[in-house]
Image 1 (cartoon, helix red, strand yellow):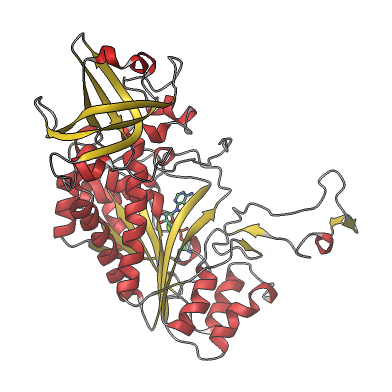
Image 2 (image 1 turned 60 degrees about the horizontal axis):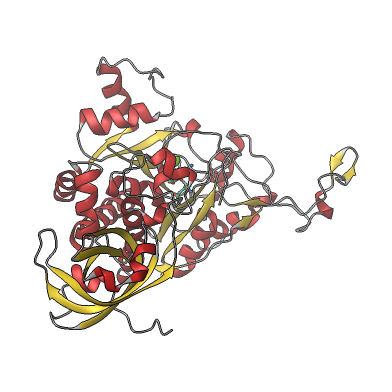
Length: 465
Ligand code: 4AD
Ligand code: MG
């Protein structure tokens, strides 16, 4: 059979690019079949868009295969595009032939009814066939494209940083180990594991961030960005943490913290605008079924300025709020999701950029302020999700960087010698940030759990599919 000649449902239903009277062939999965003596209706979805196309079959008795076409079956439907007589769709297909290509019997788990997201996680291999997960996956693709478009149009170069690395960028020790050592027979010298015998002749891990290598490229190429998977062995079982997630990390040479905040705000607004303007079809679905206020919220965020406050100010506001938090606030503590959400949902009711965090709670590479108490860090917080972006101006002064690392207890400089070198020769101010792709997809679609925006989420105790 020839499957090349086909019309996508999107062309018919969303783009309305197919004139009435055209003969079309649609390939897809049957969603429902209804029949009476004189006529049968079949709804077919091919994944190109949310909507199904309706096929109308006169004299269904002439189609013996129709009996066997149940929900979930793969079909080929040929016919003429006509204006629909019924409500609910503008066009339909007057069917001339209908072939059953792949059967689905009554055990198919996705029968026409609402399923809980918890149930659908157990069948993550089938859930992309549902309306919600079809839309989520289309949105991931569209937003990934928008991200490349945004940076490419602004002269940023897309660079590829290693996934296997020997360094812990965030210094938080949340690394997955990469090894080919025989775990039943680990080589040792003086009681310690002999990494020299391992594949890379050293310890190796999956990267938590491409930033350190991104900085090297930025000092050479100017403006760069990464967009790749990152891994964290963080035992956080929350709706916002995944062990494998995608991150976009722009890095700009000749830039300071203000430039970094400007880029973060402009970039996020661009993505929100892109979703509203270019993905109306799927966005309407999320606005109707997932979060009724979604579209209005995104529109107002695009139209307003993000709030920018120092960490010190944020703590003051939280202390004065009179709100009882599970984790008490005082200057020096790391902001928890409950604090972040309070600031953005209650205090300001819009995205908030918090900057100049305490030195003790942030990473070694951030630029130290003159007080030696705070660093040039910034986090972008949004309602529902909390932290969506984390970034900073980087420490470009070698002596200050080393002093900062020493105070953080990092005394073995050898693994960082290459990181020091770009400060040794031709050092320049530079800044960047990381946007959690899956978190921005959550924010834009209104989906409440990161497990429901990753096609195959990896979280503690779950790596199925
Ligand atoms: O704040 P983070 O840890 O910053 C960095 O990794 C820096 N190296 C980025 C940079 O400056 N180039 O992570 C950045 C973002 C967070 O704001 C969050 O959106 C996301 O990555 N993120 C996670 N998303 C899902 N699951 C997790 N476990 C995440 N951890 C961080
Ligand atoms: Mg962070």
